Length: 503
Image (tube, rainbow, N blue to C red; front, side):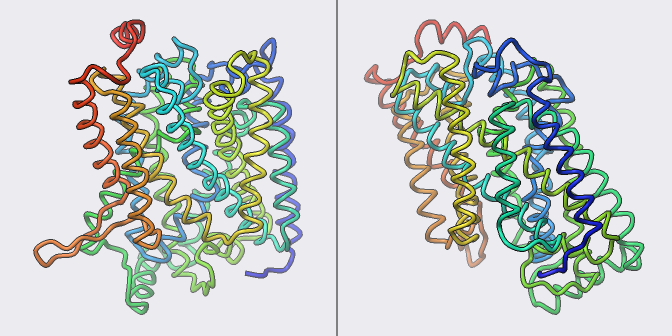
């Protein structure tokens, strides 16, 4: 895609991006505390975000620039199979409603900032804490890099060549995140979500009118898949298990990521989280409508060399320049919110569970905030370097692994909320088996998220992350039973047990 410079689109884009940049710096004064030199204030916004702010912030974490680009691209490439992302919020709703308020209470009571803080507080195991923290940082880095891929697709669609605009946009993000902390993406999330809703609703109303209606859209898509010899607007019977396992495993992993947990910990209370869980399915509607843009790409007769170009080219082809610029601004701003929260989540983990744990145990609250600010900058720079100097496929492969990896922290973080039966050696051994075994499965499957099986002459595939999690839990149970019988390993302290009962 090598478009000419579109001046109306560029002007609208610059106006919206400037507005969001100003909001990012103003956010430091929004609900201003006595000081931002405290991790609770800089990294969690003072734990005071109500229902609407939390909803927009969680939505900003879920629906990112790469989601807006990648989901329609996957539907464009493979058809109905690409809709596996659609059931996320429906599947995860009961989990969030039942579990996340309890996790929030534990974190609030003990001043925990990260998932690894919670794990250490439960099991008093530095090794298990470090495993959870390192997994969170490693799984988040490629996720930030993928926001850059989405930003780059939108910026290049404007006709701006090279990487300088991308670097400039990310530097702006880095500076106002350093200045305002979590308040910046929380405030910007209002504008970001409003813009994306406008773009999507206009697109699903206007584009089918130009293409002959939805019947023509689906017929054109089905004809394109038949001509290609793969894909379709309906799932094939052999895809049912793969589709279900991907949807379920991805939903379980979604709230294990540092950025989604950061939004949870920043909430003002357990009821706020429950209300948000009830509102989460609204985002499913948005994602489903976004995915339909992939089918519309076939109906519009787009000829693409890169499937990720389907949304930018669709808007560039079918809309006037000013609205295309508005849509591209929505995509880029859709990268700024999650990228900021992701870098803050990773910085919180590094500060609390590495720097404070191993380098400076007596660090002051102001010192913690300073380390986190610097780390958030370095995390963004690292993600930028991945995009600039490594093949894009490298970031894609790592992101697929990210979901598998972060899923392996589920037993250590969640099981301890409900029982003190598990022991730290068992959970650490389970994490190790799941992490290494899942990575090996992904490697043997050429970094595809599914692992194939043959049973009774039939072939089927299962999400590798779920297979790794099953091995993780099995090992955790066996090793915990062994260590319990010998009275060793990670028993909860009396105060932690009392806290668990009160929770």
